[in-house]
Image (tube, one colour):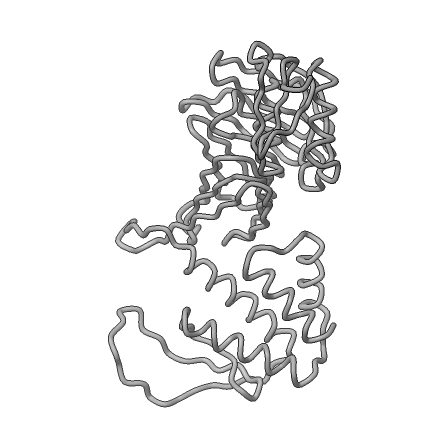
Length: 339
């Protein structure tokens, strides 16, 4: 792999813009590379020195490609150092690995929203978010993986030593790293608990349902502090907000997080929620002129590459409405201007 390619992948990783394929390519390179040219070695060293300015560590890479360990004090006071250092030559595979880890630490420090003291020590709260039309991949401190869908926000502490807890609004797919310590996902009055499951949580504040789907492992679902269900692979729970309904049903595992590959499936969803979803995906404004149809439930699926106009045209045909485009708005209804 060329120096420019590894630089691009690391920069994508730093900005949380890596696709799943780019992530796999980056870590495959880290695991398998045994040789590197001088330009790549120089770039990695420069990058790591840059990271050290934001996150001083007990270990760093010097200009000769060696790992240097130093004493470091946590009380921020200057203390004498006895001058002893240990150096260890390491292959560039480890240098790149250290650089990636450093970038992760640096990213965490840049995204700190606030700090709070717990059990006599400080823990940093990290806030990650996506805008309309934007997806994001995250690697949590315990090595659990998260794929965030559009217009979503995730809160978590960067130190999972006490517990593994995250809070989300929006939608995300979680692949939880196995641990005896439970992993907790909270959204409003709904709490999910698991040890090693893969699951999808859809919990947009302006939609009428919270939807939990499991593709691997077991997930217990709690509402207002009470356990209401335990889900296994291929099971989905729809929790109503206004009518407080709870409905469990089967779902094909391959459909659970189809949105990661650009496929959006609405299974007997309310028309207003489908429109809200399309607004988030394509970052557009959609006006439903026939408000009496906003609670109509339909089954429909879209692919992102179809584009907003084709998606709305299909939705209009299914619900007996016409589409018009006026200015920056898309109008959907039987009484749309020009119909």
